[in-house]
Amino acid sequence: MDLVEQGNGPAVRLLIASNGDPRNERAFSGSLRALCDALARRGVVHHTANVSGRNDAFVRRSLPVRAFQKLDPFHLIERYRWSRMAFRMNSMRAQRAARTQPGFNACLMYGTAFNSQLDVPTYCYLDATSAQIYKARQWEFRWFSARKAQSVIDYQREVFHMCTGIFPRTGWVGDSVINDFGVPPEKIHVATAGPNYTLEPAPHGPYDAQRILFIGRDFERKGGPLILEAFRLTRAALPSAKLVIVGCEVAVDEPGVEVMGVIKKDAPGGLDRLLDLYRHASVFCMMSHYEPFGIVVIEAQDCYVPCVVPRRFAFPEMVLDGVTGRCVEEYDARVLADTLIELLSDPVRLEAMGRAGHDHVRANYTWDKAAERIYQQIQRDLAARRT
Image (tube, rainbow, N blue to C red; front, top):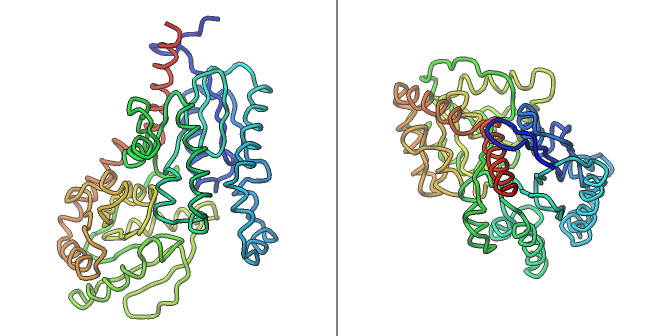
């Protein structure tokens, strides 16, 4: 059957299979919903399906399950989630959704914890590979043996080689797909991502408040202790400097430090509070020891806040060193402090960086742009397939 033309190519009717509920605001920090909505605005979404069932990480965070996880020394739920059995069950649910929703001509998998194995061009979207997570010994992978980790890497390899194309968020992830999994470079199409909010950021306030903003739930992994140590050195040189810590509860009581705890975007007034924090921040700082993407850095730049991050992972793609912020070479408190002192002492430069960061995000890191890259590539592949 001939496809109906859509724009300059064949129509795209997309089945989106995801390892989480696209309607859940907290699924992948809202990224799943944001991408599905952006694709839906293009009129290309045929159906969305959650393939995780009871294994849905964003549904099973109920109080009884969290209590079980805390008391379980063997991490059984996490081990099952990454098991071959869970992979097979998720794959079966994806195939069942395909059978019950006929009429699609392409499939986009959000995540790689299943293999839809359909007879249409199939793609996956991801923010990190299992090889990257295992090398960093993060999340469940810190408990895995080498054999268990290799099993997860192997079935992710199956997914990559089955896919017509792969949409990593960053070139850093795309390089891992090529080098760690042996995937041909021509299958890699960097899609990026965008801020996980829908409100337009307010104009930024003055940059001379010497206010450093940190946002993150995992204080240790995101470099909180290093930032705190560097802040003490910064405050010795700039007594008016302030550090605002958001997203976690840490026992810090010292001059210039304000701990605001968790602020949820989907709670009443939560997003407005976060946007207000961005509006009054001079710089945003996050020194993660591992970070698959870090959407908060995109959100900060979108809100005109220069960012200070490590020159690691995908950060150099997201933060243009010397233009929209600074990429710090070392995990060293003195080096970080010197960088912060240099920036906080020059509010005119901070304002220029803030404007450049906002323009950089709007040109490269929005969900509409990510959806357009995905849509255009799938349409090209459908056209080639038809020919």
